[in-house]
Length: 275
Image (tube, rainbow, N blue to C red; front, top):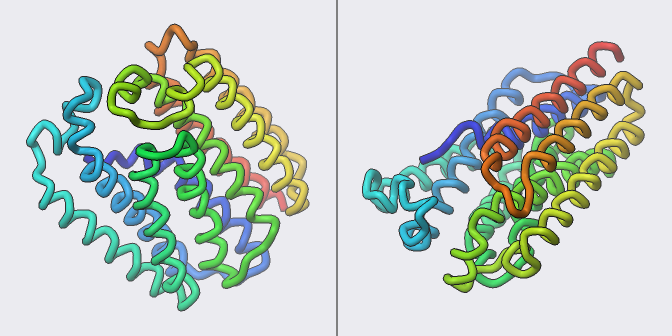
């Protein structure tokens, strides 16, 4: 039910935030461990909750009817137990990272869970998803620095627009179904062509925010090489998906987006080593 490949979309952003925070803060191996545990636990809780809330809708959709809860492979009570356990692990990990992280873990869980309801009343559900997942770099930064910085907000905004952009692309698969169920999304409201244009604008914003992050942290110029690779990967992603041709959507969604995250982390690591 929970694909670790989904976690890798945001995890490299959080690790990148840690590396940037450690430039001016003491490295602690336990911080690294608890941040990684918190990331996986939060994502697992969020996805599990989403699968429970959407079980009846997923059952009606041919594309999602094979998911574990709609197909009867997994019961809702079992999934709920998993969500509660994952949530507890996330909160416990946050507690181990300090009082600030512990306090903030509760509103973070709220935002992650609340996303599952947004497609029932707003076309901006993709933006809200990006916002919720975009909290990951901020959380990692606070865990290390115990404070906020305008610099790291650029990385969170990059993750928010990156997530929102490809979520819009992915939701183009379900336009007809979502309309029949009175569900909201950019593709439902504006059609596939305009929705994909919006996704392009969001991914351009991603590149802008990454550039601003590079500038604000005064990062080594080698990072521009990785930023260029990310731009090429996003371009390929949008070339793979057309309003009237979605057969490559899974390649664009899973493979290209995973590469974007990994390239970002590689760029931050190389930059840190050169620094």
